[in-house]
Length: 136
Image 1 (cartoon, helix red, strand yellow):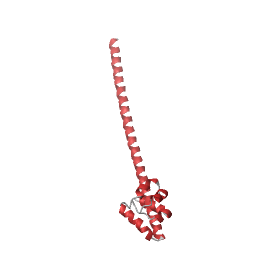
Image 2: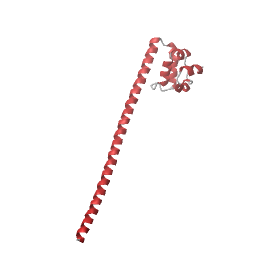
Image 3: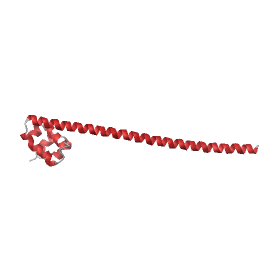
């Protein structure tokens, strides 16, 4: 039986809906909600069955085993965060590089347009100068 009141009190809002799908020992919700949160958020435990099996094992585990599980899940969270950070950094670098290339292309096109206008203007001035010389 799922203790929804305890889930509401001990777990963050974003995990409550997920947590009601599991049978989680009340003792662990009360005393070690951090490990429940880590299991619910774990990416390596991708199936509902796998997470439930860990919740089922918790009452049989000793303190050392629980601490080891907590450590593993905490390191997983940290590593995934580092990977996400590197991914965001690479994404920003690529975006900056693309933006710079695009700005360079726009600049080049504007310069070409200005050169073309100058060439046309010179051509008009040359024709006007020729006309003036022929009129003299």
